[in-house]
Length: 169
Image (cartoon, rainbow, N blue to C red; front, top):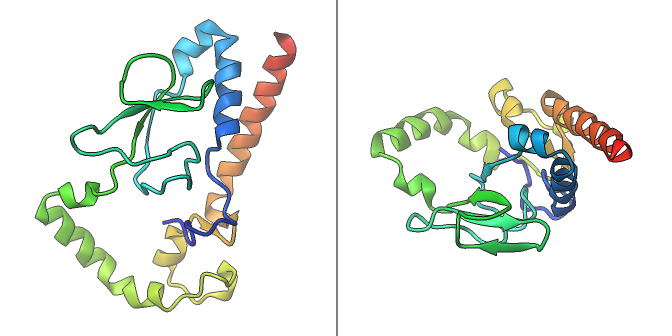
């Protein structure tokens, strides 16, 4: 759950610039590129321009994938060519079997009032959340919550590796 994910003050999880830097680094190391390249992203939030900044429009059940080319900043309806395969179907939950929906709803229902009564402008430590709700919140007021701070550390390590490799080549 991205608390306040539609708030413009929350930075994207993967920006266009981040993706371009990754592609530049990987393209300069063909062998490494073939082994570790990012092949696909499935954006279950279907939040255009949100957590995945370069996801410009939702895909559909009939056409579930598009290819994003970071070099040219374009989406193609094809799954061929360079880029990253994107899937972002905004009505995907409606495609799930009724049993899955009922199970999810039954598990979520006890926390609905707690979430509805929360104030997205407050910092996470100012809220009286149950452990279940608190543990589900990834970002709050534009920053990663303590349980998910490891994400920034992973990004920093990858960026350092990028800088090292960039200086080598």
